[in-house]
Length: 536
Ligand code: HEM
Image (cartoon, rainbow, N blue to C red; front, top):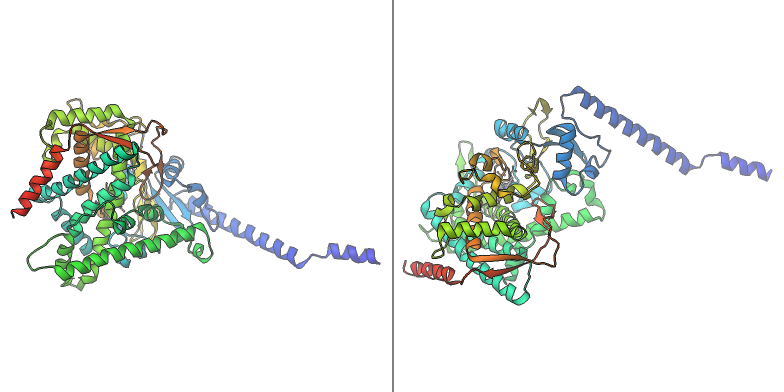
């Protein structure tokens, strides 16, 4: 009797096993339906092809920690326009010059949107132009930001001279620090110093003021780029899988850091704007913040009414300050890394500046057309590193198409700039660092080829700091080559590896810096500058 009971127990399914079986059947049916839907969509041929996306996570696992490389590999399989799924969102990825130009230039306004990502709403107090959606307000916002940046940097010879003076003064401070660090430590890591140096230049334009390298507040505000970059690069996972916020996990922690970082950074900018409002004088525009206050405080209108007001001053300054510091400091890190990894190229640049400028004065912006090897080195550093590998995510503003594929309104779009700069059809040995590829047989800079480097994006969202950045990178490179020797640490591996984020940064490296002569030229330049400022 007891034996029969036991047999009955065994053969009777428990509640748990019924539940497990039912859930498994449901999951299989769900995946099957999902798969059928994917096959139907792909077969229709109207939507871009792409890898099969898993439920819940989509293709996140296949994309991994270097999306630009994964995307380039996928493009070889699926073509330049393909689709992946990240969490619940369809993402179209554009690769290669033709597809990217077709979308961003020919169909500029169709692709000028930004996704409604949670992380984007946290930037610049929620009123960011760089992360804001495409509309009339955005157009007015961008116009003001762009014309003001130009007015304080590259719009005419006078502004260029004033900007050059800021840069040379900052390079002098940087050199003193480099020489001191070399004396104290022999080999030191330059990344933090370069971050403060570039932040100081944009700070001089935005706030009329530079900071000491020891300033704790400034260092803490500008020294946390990595956390910003990690989250925004190719879309944060919280943006596409919002449920990740509901339980403790590393992504939630990273997102929390991103929130705090944005709050602190925006509070820093707001304080500066408040100080400026309190001290601004009629008829005197000291810096960009004053210019934005004058332009926006009375309200900017169009035929539909007020578009922008005084509440847009801090976000505009925050966008410009934020967009410039991480990008430019990363560019300088690459330039210095490449100078130490290729000492023969460093010697080539030194020879060129010595021949063209001589040793009796410092290089200036007017020397740029006569220094093709310096410019070729910068373009090759940008191409080779492609340190902004994927742009800030875009979104479609309407139903549209690229390469014949239908892309619905509000689709997230990733633009893989890296794929353009490493296209073997376009560049001979793209994985080799070779600045001479940009210098023609007659010794001139090949402008057609430099224009093919894609790092500032294209079309309606093209970077507004491009001219300013190129001028700054030219002066830094030419002056540093004229004044310094950069030496690699022989105890470190000679790599060119990088860490992924919105910007690709070189893995930490250390250098020694020695002077090629004395500080006399730099010192007398700054002394003359101070004299002329005092006499005004
Ligand atoms: C070497 C330095 C720089 C690089 C490589 C760079 C690159 C980029 C890229 C790839 C974008 C995204 C474009 C897109 O989404 O399609 C961008 C946007 C932007 N950049 Fe830069 N940038 C640099 C420096 C600067 C500087 C110095 C400023 C400010 C003066 C600046 C201001 C902006 C702004 C405001 C946007 C947003 C534009 C928009 O959404 O309409 N950038 N930049």
